[in-house]
Length: 88
Image 1 (tube, rainbow, N blue to C red):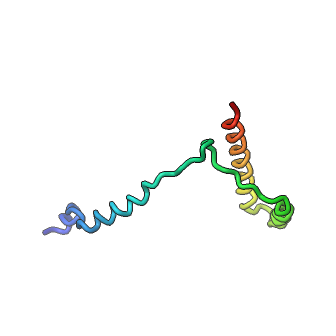
Image 2: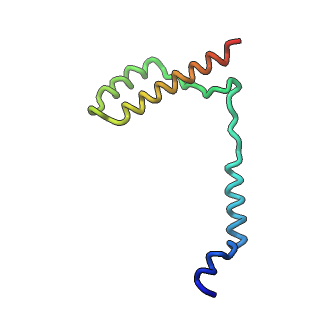
Image 3: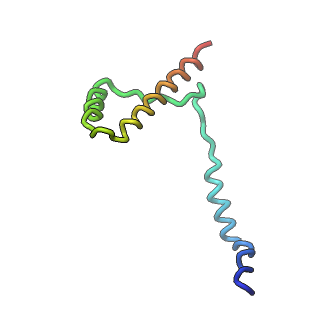
C-alpha cells in the first residue's frame, strides 16, 4: 500500500467514539438569567479606593489600564441592559 493511501483510511473506531464522548460535554447549555442580561458583580466600597491606588501605581502605558477601561464599559452596558429589561 502506498504511503498516500493511509491518509484516506477511516480513523479507528476508538478515536471516533472518544471524539463523540468528548464533544458530548460541549453540549451543556448556558442558562441565561431571567432578565437575559449577565449579572454585575458588586464590589464593596472599601475595596474601591484600594483598587484605584493599585491602578495609579501601574507603570505608564500598562496594558491592564486599557483592559480595565473595557471592563468598565461592559459593566455600564450590563447596567443599561438590566434597567431596560426590568422596565415595563
